[in-house]
Image (cartoon, rainbow, N blue to C red; front, side, top):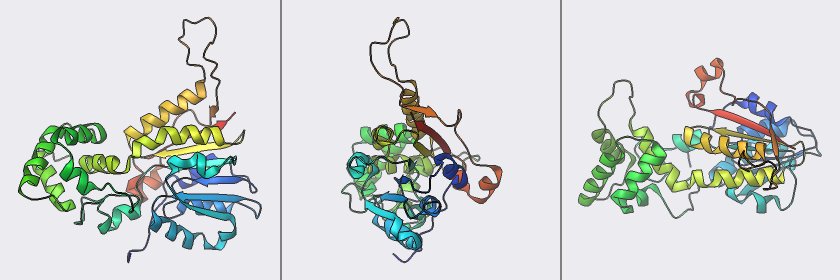
Length: 308
């Protein structure tokens, strides 16, 4: 691809601080992207330290490889989905794991990837270009009922039924093939709101989540990460919308609490014990300076916990 891989990592200093990096430690960046967070992690490692850089996007790994070239002896690149974290680690116990759940700036800004409603391109939205399901398949093959459900659940869109109906009506004439075609269907289906210039955002988010199974991987990956961590190791997760954050918040709470017995039980019978302790009580959000420089940091939240 001709476009340079650009990804501005959000909450960079806060994330690195949350991981409490040891120079000779083992660290995992589950969503390497352009290598922004990875670069700051590996800079802090000595020759005895190691970073495992995972991404399902081969273009991301290629770009990260160039960025991390000065430290190549300390990095292992893995082309995979972090859902497979347990098998990737193969019993290794990391000192820190980072999961940055957002779609990368590069993926949004590269028109041919079909993520953006601001640029015309074939409907795609696959984070892993080798995956079989694309946005074109979802928009043109899913039933009206399925489309309405996805747009409502994953986009939190009040007008999901109207949008789904419009998509089905339009595709009966010809397939919906481009991002601009889909964006125009959405904008025509949603009442104008002067306070919301881009009503397409929610529907595009919903279809992207469906294409990539984004919400399905979060809980198992966090549980696998928490189980694999060395005692005292840190798990840090960055979310970009409420659907992701709710899952992370719930799973962290369960792993921090341990016991799931009803409160009226006099003694614990479930046998579950706390696995993590919180590093911060509240999620960390971007400072004013970052908010001004990077609009994509506005919705970002960082949660971090330490293995007991």
